[in-house]
Structures are given as structure tokens and as C-alpha cells.
View 1 (tube, rainbow, N blue to C red):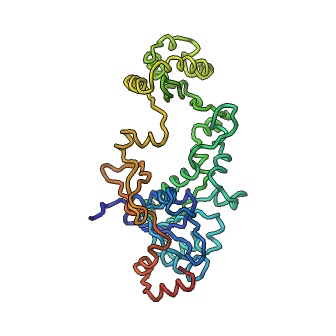
View 2: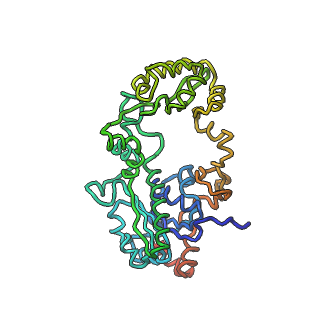
View 3: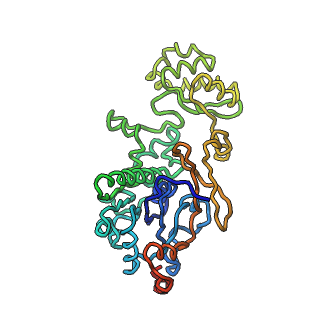
Length: 395
């Protein structure tokens, strides 16, 4: 069966990434068709830096649609092979600490000398320069330093991390966007670029409204729990059988909500008449709304409020999310076949392009699964030469 054409199929990517942020960036390229070669340590080095649970859900979800080549970049021959591959590549992605790639001799300037058109993508914890550049940086550290933890959680409850690695994921998505921008620019200039971001920069950008409040209005936001920091009412309310999210902070939505919950007089109450007064009297207003929403079950409110044009929805556990008919329609759990694990579902791409499918072309590879194939096809090595490299611990 012929695979459908995917828009990034003409690009070749060398993937030097580990952990989550870098693999997230590369996953976007791989899912949309780029030929991605994952560079890993040879088995002879006795370490799998990709983690011990290669057949676990996290690794399989992050590294699908890739090929694997083992290569010891600390050897001269390993570096030569890498640069030979880089000469034929379009993109390189890495998330080492900044000086590591320089010590290995595979930094942007080294690669640009053999391939001026290379787009070189980098993610670090804190940026490629500055007093913290060489510090190890992980997601929760960036969540704390960006201010995110200070605005997450219930008021007075102390800082709280977000329940997903949002700094890693944001940095990966931002870098993927930057790589695509650089590839577009290369069509005009013929030159590549070094594109880089960090967990800290990405999370500051994702702070968006909260950071803009400080930069433009001098406000230092605090924790608001499930409430929106400025648009009220927005939050979690009790129902007869559980909880519901309601977002009706805009004036029109607020007025619609008062009618939908059978309390139009609330819109006339001066304590709740406008955005500013509702923010000041948020707790009292939420209590009034909660007393009314607790009279019907969640499903009834979802139907009634959507009919009135008010954004609302149930609060799911992840199993309920994947069982929702809308989620099933969106195809967010595509299947992929693994030769050892069989059929499994992974997290789908949120981006859709018309009616184009989201094919999962292959599961995450085994270490060095494609080493021989890639060295033969891309660099013309024969079997004897590859075996010699294995014996030397290069591949």
C-alpha cells in the first residue's frame, strides 16, 4: 500500500535530542513526513540515554515515525560520519547544554561549514548565553522561574506545578515553528539559520496574559484557583451529580447566563453589573451561581447552556476524554503497529490539514535498528566497513 504524501516528506532531519522538549519538536516534523534519523549511543557504550522503558508509553509516543542510527560522537570517525550525514540533511535538532555540542565539534558553525543551508535547532534550559546558560534545566524548574507556579493553584495554597510538562512541550512546539520558518526563509536566501529557544523563554511566552498584566499594568498576579484571573464568572461549579466548567466573563455572556440559570435579576444587581464589580465580588457571585447549578445534573446544564450560547463543559478524567464522541470524531488516538508490542494507540496531532490523514508510519525504533540501512543508502558504506565500525565502537 502506498503511503499518502505528507508535506514535509522532502526534508531530512538529524535528531540528537533527549528527554521531552527536543523530541517534542522533532515529533512535529516526523509526523508530517520528514525523514528523521535518531542518533543514539552504540550498545557497546552500555548506556541507553533514551531511558530504560524503551517499550513504555512515553518513549513510544515521543519517538514514533523515526529511524535509529547508533553513533559515538566522541570518536573522530563518529564525528566524521555525523558531518557527512549533516552535509545531506536539511535540519539538525539538539537539546544539549550549550557547550556540549561545541565540545563534540557538531555545533552550528561546524555544521554550517559543510552545509551552509542547514537549519540547526537548539533547546536549552535557560538560553544559549547568559549567567545560567550552562545550568541543567528541566520542566519544573522553568515552571517555577517563569512565574507559572506562582499563579497556579488555589489562593493561599502555595505554588503549584501544572500537571503536564508544559515548559518542555511549549519549547518543543515553538522550536518546531521556528525550524519551519527558517526552512521557508531558506527558499528565499539559500542560507540556513541557527534557531534556538529555551524552557524558560518558552514558558515566559506562554505566561502571556499574566506576564502582560505585569509588563503593561504593573500588576503582579497571584493564584486564582479555577477562576479566571480577570473575567468573572469563569470557573468550576457544582451540579447535582458532579461539576461543570462555565466561562461567561464577557458582558453579553454574563447576561445570557443569568437568564439561562433562571436568575436574570443578578444582571441588574450593582454588585455584579460589570466586569470590575464582578471581580471585586467574585466569591459571593460564585456562591450564588453554585446554589443554582447544583439543582440540575451536569448533562442537563451542558445542553441548556450550550443552547443559550454559553461556553461550558464537563470535567473529565483522561479515560472519559478519550471516550467522548467529539474526541473520537477528531481522531486523537491513531494506531501504530510495533513489531514486538503489536497495535497500540498514541496521542494524535492536534493540527489537521483538510482531509489529509494523520498516518503513523512506524512505531519508535529499536536502538540502531536502521544503522546499516542508513550508512549504506546515505554514505555508501558496505557491510564489511560497517562491521569494522561496530568493532571499533563507532556505531
